[in-house]
Image (cartoon, helix red, strand yellow):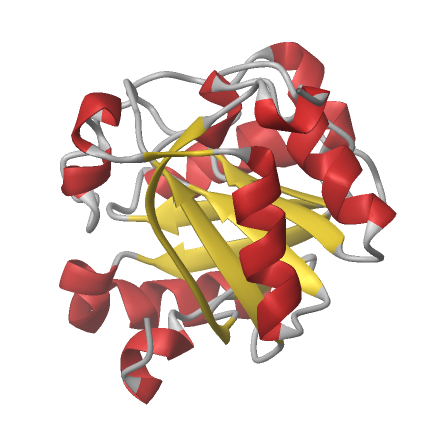
Length: 204
């Protein structure tokens, strides 16, 4: 049995769609949503992902085969909190097929894997480990309250100078938060706005 078959992962869902937010917004991507999360954001829109035991196990080979069959050039590994798992085998197998590995993480755990793009979205409920912040390709802060802007600047000071900075209005608070985010970005031009366009497009 190969190493690829010895590291099954709990997969809540996997599908080919359009990246809905951040730097790669609008690009085609295959999403692999892993089950398991101990961060516990109250506004999480995929709370059903939190219990890893509720989702079927897939081998790395099965995951890579699904991505390759779809013809996707980007695989976004998300959750849940995907860095609860060692993703070395999965990311290596994707790279061998010429597929980019992107990850969306709260940063609560160290990065284990070889990633082409790391999106870190820190959460107050379980702050990121310091080691992941210099590796972030993209910092995405969900704005749920006016105090979150101060929180955003704390983490912007810890990422690299090349890291892309995004503010994302929380979906349920969008009517109130969007005007605040617009004004903040006008005054702090190092930031960009990231909207969840997949919800407007009605795609997963």
